[in-house]
Amino acid sequence: MAFAAESAGPVLQCQSVERRFGGIVALNGIDMQIERGEIFGLVGPNGCGKTTLTNAITGFYPPQRGRILLNGRDITGLAPHYIATLGVARTFQNLALFNGMSVLDNILLGRHIHMKPGVARTALYWWLARPDETVNRAAVEDVIDFLQLEGVRDELVDGIPIGLKKRVELARALAAEPSFLILDEPMAGMNQEEKEYMARFILDARDERGVTVLLIEHHMDVITGICDRMLALNYGAMIGSGIPADVVADPRVVEAYIGGAHAAR
Amino acid sequence: MLFRQAGIFHTNYAADRALFPIAADRWMIGILLAFGFAAPLLVNSLYLSSYLLPWLIWTAGALGLNLILGWAGQFHLGYAAVMGIGAYATVHATRAGIPWEIAIVLGGSTAAIIGIGFAFAALRVKGLYLALSTLALQFVMDWVISHVPAISGGTQATLQAPDIRLLGQPITSDAGLYYVALVWCILVTSFMLNLRRTALGRALIAVREKDFAAAVIGVNSFYFKLVAFSTSSFIGGVTGAILIGTFYHAVTPEQFSVDVSIQALAMVIVGGLGSIIGSYFGAAFILLMPGAMNSLISWAAIRFGFSLSIETLAHLPQALYGALIIGFLLIEPLGLGKIYNNVRDYLLVWPFGYVKK
Ligand SMILES: Nc1ncnc2c1ncn2[C@@H]1O[C@H](COP(=O)(O)OP(=O)(O)O)[C@@H](O)[C@H]1O
Ligand SMILES: [Mg+2]
Image 1: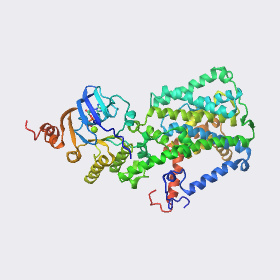
Image 2: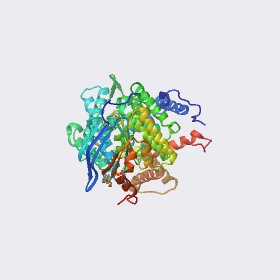
Image 3: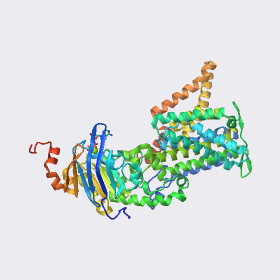
Image 4: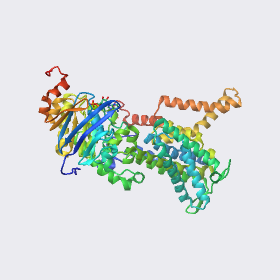
C-alpha cells in the first residue's frame, strides 16, 4: 500500500496561531511542530481550546493570526474539503458518522478523495464505475480487517454501540490513507478494555500504515503510555510541551489539571 | 419463505454489490419487467394510455425530484418549472426541425443549465430559505413562460407538440408512446439504483447527513449540491418533454404550475424520501387517489342515498385526499417505500420472526 509520505521535514507546524470567538481568546499564540511518524499528545482541561486547534488545522475555524503548514505547505485559510485532499484526516469528539448508511458505506466514504464520483460513472456503472468501486472496496476491506470490524460490516451505523462507532470513525479516517491523522478524544466514554484496544490501534496505525498522529486525550495514562511528545494547553495558551514524563511533572500542568491543591502556591 | 438470504455467498466484491442479490427480488423484477413490456398486449388501450403511461412518466419525474430531496437533502418547490423548461425547449426544438432524440437531450440540458445557474444563487442559503428560493424559480418561470410570446406562443396559448419521431419514424400508436415512457422510466430507475452503490450516491448522502463531516473526508458540499441540482433538472426536463410528447401532445403553462410542483413533492414524500420503489408507489397514489376518492364518494352517495351539493362534491375529494396524506405521514413518515420494506424485512426471516434481520 502506498503512503502519502513526503520524505523530509515536519508534518505539521503551527506558528503563533491565534483564534478568537468574539471576546474569548480560544487559542493564544500556539507554536507546535509535529514530526513525521510521531504520536503527539494534546491535553488540557475542558474548554481550553483543543478542539478549536483541530478546527483551525482542518480549516473549519481558520486562525485570525499565525500560520499553519502541512508538509511545509501553507494551508492557513484553505477550505476543509481541500485540506482533506492534502492528506489530513480526523475524527470528531462527538462522533460524526453518516446515519442511515451501513458501516461499509461509511468507511467507503473515507475513500472519497481516491475515487472519481460522477454522473456518467453512475449511469454506466457496469462499465465505468465497477472497477473503481472494486479496487476501493479492497482498500476498505483492509481497514475493516485492521480494525476488526468484519462482524458489523453490513449493519446500519445508527444501531451499533458507541465504542464501535468510534472505531468505525477511525476506520473512515484511515481509509483515506492520510499522512496526518487527528483524533479528538477517541477514548471518551470507553471502558478500560475498549481504551486499550483503541491505544493498540493507534500504535498500529502509526507503525503499519505510517500515519503521523495528533491525539487529543483526557486520560494522562494514555498520553504517557503511547505519545512521543506532547503539548499541554490551559485557557488557550501553551503551558508545557516536550516529553510526556517531563510535561506531566511540570508544576503548571499539575496545577491546571488538579486545580492547584497539590501545587505549591 | 420467498425471500431467502441463506445460502447466498459472494465470492467477489462486484457480486456483493449486485443490485438484487436475493433471488426472489430478481424474479419479481423479471416478472414486472416482462409485464411492463407485454402490457400493450394485456391491458386495453384506454388503461394503457390514461393510467400506465402517466404513472411511468410521473415515476421518472418523482425519482428525479427524489434525487435532490431524498439523496442530497435539498428542498425543491419548483420542480414543475424545471419540467416545463425541458418541455418548452423540446417542443420549440422539434418545431424548428431538430430530430426528437436530439431535442429531448437539448430540453434536458436547457433545464439542467437553467437549474444550475439558479442553484448557484440559491445554494448560498439552506433549508427553508432554499425552499423559498426554489419557489421563486417556479414563479419566475411561470411568469416568463406566460409573458414571453416567443416561448408560450402568446398569452393563454396552447402550443401543439409535433409527433414524436424516433429515427425518422413517427410514433403515434398507444403502444409506441407507452414504450417511450417505459424505456425512460427504466433508464431513470437504473440510474437511481446505481446511485446506491457508487461514490456519487454516497457523497450526496454525506452532504445530506452532515456537511461538516462530509467536508472532513474531502467532499465539496457545494459542488455535489450543484451536481444533484443539475442531474435532477436534466431528469425533470426530459420527463417534462416526454410527458408532453406522449401524453398531452400540446404544451400550456398550467401543465407546469405550482400545483404540479406540490403534487410532485407529495409523490416523493408519500412514497418515501430516498426510496426508489417508494417513488413508484407515491406516483401511483397521487395520480389515482383523486379519481378513486371521487368514485368512492359518488358510490357512497348512491348506496346510502344522501345527496351532496355540487360545491361539496367538488371539494370533498380534495379534503379527503389531504387528510389521507397527513394520516400517512403521521403513521409512517418514511412513506410507502418504508412500509414495503417493513413487509419485506418481515418476510426475509419469516417464520423465524425472532431473528434479527
Ligand atoms: N464556535 C464557537 N463559537 C464560540 N465559542 C467557541 C466556539 N467553539 C469553541 N468556542 C470556545 O472556545 C473555547 C475552547 O473550546 P474547545 O476548543 O471546544 O475546548 P476543548 O479543549 O474542550 O476541546 C471554549 O471557551 C469555547 O466556549
Ligand atoms: Mg474538545
